[in-house]
Length: 407
Ligand SMILES: *Cc1c(COP(=O)(O)O)cnc(C)c1O
Image (cartoon, rainbow, N blue to C red; front, side, top):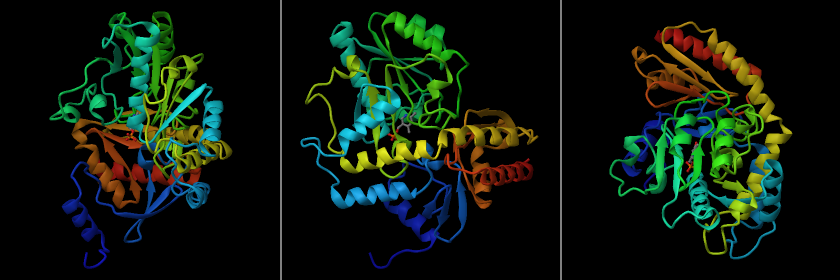
């Protein structure tokens, strides 16, 4: 390399030349973040309304997380699970006490935690429920997003995610999202689990009708099928509850999958949580990960959970989310087809005539608000949960201005 490239155009060109083209990012090149804000290489400031798909719920570069990462990095970063370390155990206790599950299995990416849940459910099916070998079925839903491994894309309903990646993994049935009659009908003696996002994030902030999870809980209990919720994006405060399933009374899944905000954007940490009956299917050697549960991960995730609690970010998500909802509902435009809001998670679905969400995201970028379209017609608004009322009001005013201009 001859010289360090500096300007945005140069950096974009170099990324496009050497990086695989598996994303289509907005052409904004960021170099610094703090709280709700990020700055590009030219010094322009933006309010981050994506928050790395809710990984940065605690805000960018939270000083406590920076410190936790730095302190632990100076001491011990990786032991592998071949040896024990003094951070992992206390983290396990902390997350189990917070969530009310008996055991946790730590991984790195969200997809790995989903894979862990699938392996646990299948093994539970064979060893506990008594399903015949290799016959286990897992029910999932249309429009789902659970990650990008071959097994996970095998049950995606998005053709692009699967195209060219076969042969796919069998053993999944895809049902209409939130359709509990379909779940009842699809269950056979071989069904081991239902895997669901309590709110579909990548799907466009799709919120199932009230009572859906309660009904699912009843069906799963009655049929002896595991209820497994993927709260990688919906969990840890985004919806105005610690977990999205807490919006309904008396619902507790058998397995809970976390990731993203579990480490406040500082480091990849994911987890699968369950009680002994389910987690007990794993014995030494069955499953694992070199980096899973490493001291850095445990230190950062432990602090990220404390920050959520100490700063009452769940309550803030609820309050500011309400503010966003009121502000956005007051924008009268033909461009908006539907506004979907739960906590601080907002999907603005545009009418097809509006010309696509990407155009709005690019216009918002010019105004200092970073949003990302999900699918073609939905703008997702999901800032860090640390956002203040003043910052929210400014964001709402900016959205209003852009909607008026593009109308
Ligand atoms: C992001 C996400 C995943 C995948 O997480 P990765 O860390 O990208 O592997 C899985 N499920 C849901 C609901 C997600 O939002």
